[in-house]
Structure formats: C-alpha cells, structure tokens
Image (cartoon, rainbow, N blue to C red):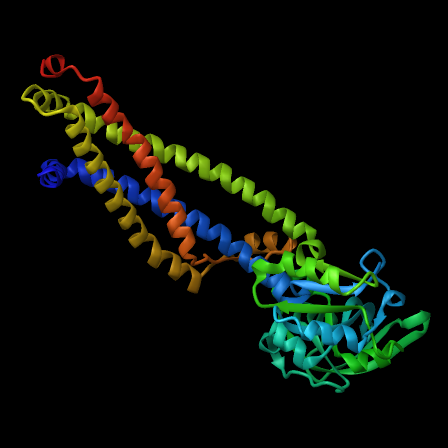
Length: 404
C-alpha cells in the first residue's frame, strides 16, 4: 500500500517530479565531467612526462641528482641487476647514460640532452618506436641517432643527414663524434621535443669514454599506484651506494602542480555542489509548499505522521535514485567519447600550454569509481535536503495547513 501511494504521488504532478529528477541528473553529469576531466588531464600529463621518459622510479649513484655530471655515474653490477629482476613488481629495467652535449649541423649548433639507452628496453618502457614520425628505429651497437622533432627543426636536418656531437666525457676527456640520423621522433613534452637525442647505450659509452657506466636506471612497474611502496622497498634493499627516487621526486613541479590543482578542484567542486544544493532545495521547498494542504488533510483524517514521513522519504529516495541513474546514463557515453576523442586546443592557447610543458590535450578518464563517488555525493546531498519536508510534517498543524 505504501509503495503504491509513493508511486502515485510521484506522478500526480509529473512536471514537478521530472524537474527534480533532471536537477539531480545534471548535478551528477556536471560533477562526473569535472572529475573525469581533472583525472584525465593529469593522467595524460604524467603519462607524457613520466611514461615517455623518466619512468616511475629511477636509481642513481648516491649524490648524482644534486650534481648531474658523468663523474657521478656508476658501474652496473650484476648483483643489482639480479636483485631488480627478481622483484615481481618491476616490469622493465632500462639502463641509461645521459649528459648534456652540443649538436651541430653546418653553422648551426644547439645544446641538447644525449640519452644513451638500450634500444629494446627503451622501447618496452616508453614505446619510443611508436613515436617515430620519419625514418626508422635504431638498433643496439648501431652508430645512428634518433632526433627529437623540435631539435631537428632547429638544426634544419632530416633523416639520413649527419650531425656532429661535442661534449665532455668521463673524467673530463673530450668527446666528439659524427652520427647519421636514423629517425625523427615526436615527444609529447615540448621541453623534451626540443632537446633530446637518443643514441644506443654501448655507442654512447664509447663516445663518452665511460665503458660500462650508467647515470641512471629507469624502472617500469606493474601498478603506478604502488610507486611509493616500491620506492621505499628498494631504498631499504639495495644499499646506501644508490639513491632511489620516485617520479614525484624527479619532477616535483609536476607533482606540486597536481596537488595544487587538486585543491582548486575541491574549491570548484564545493561551488558546484553549493549551486546544486540550492537548486535541489528550491525544488524540494516548492514541492513541500504545494502539498501543504494535502499533508494537513491526510493527518486530519487519521494518517500517522510517521507513515506520512515514510511516504515522503520513499518519494525522495525514488526521485534521487532515478536522477542519479539518469545522470550516470547521460555522463557515461560523454566521458567515453571524450576519452577516445579528447579536446585538443590549437593556436595561441596551445602555445601557451606548451610553454608551461603541457600537451594541449584534454581527455577524460573513464574510471567507475568517479561515477560511484560523485553519484554518492549527490545522493547524500539530495537525502539531506530531503529531510526538510520530514521536519515540515513533524511540526505541521493540520488545521492551519488546511486554511487557504
């Protein structure tokens, strides 16, 4: 009987019910979109900067990060390699030898970052091969380079051209060599795209007179959420000779930016929820005022206030439930679409983002937890606001309520 009464009450004034359902649905839609965009943009940023190069964890000689010179490189020991390979959470181990050099073609010379790396392992970690836009991927022991697209434009070179690299090798020796350009790669980070040169690890070690030496080991892990735990475990197990750093320590500006933006997200979410709350409260207030006479009459003819409150809470639950479901139904295809076809800015807006090291791409993140969490928040808000008609019924005087 109570369920029938609840259902009929909802559709006695279908316009009022639909307005309330629509208010809740759009509240869920906006909340989900805001959170999905935030997570998607920063996941893309981390993927670009971390997944494209640094890895989630790096190992260096102790003191290297404070003074990044070749003299602070280290010789790779079999014991360290074995220990890393035995860790089931570590999926990729990429040895690198990195240093600043000058790249020259004709009368043009540019400073760049030389990255000596294992061709196969690098591709497994960063999918470098997929980023080639011209030419082909290099092989280990091949005396050829991959040049970042922006640097290639600065030097005005293309595939099969030859560049000269100048730098300072291990223990201050002079390093110079000519290398053929095997491929041009596009890197999502603008700073990397303007400055990176890749050379096979063994060739780089010979070029810098640093045989069997590395400046870093980049690690790919099975679950990025476990980065901190894996970092702490490695710090405790591999000894004081090495420093183990997570990507948040390697790129603190990105980490700090994400944390700062998370605070701004909560502020904007608070404003959004405040607007949503006032909208819902206005709808519930209107609904309660319209039914004042009805409530008074039901109590006057003998209906207990507790049963009337039960009917009202049932109505609120059903309306809220329908609104939340509609909000999820509307937001889900939109989030999926914007994930597959993200918003990409162009022109001056894109240039402004690139100056700060961001790719001007705004994808969403399709995470079921976003839908669940935002729906629960809106549901809780609607239920709290729905307490008003219950309080109204509790203090209602039926005689006064039936006077027009």
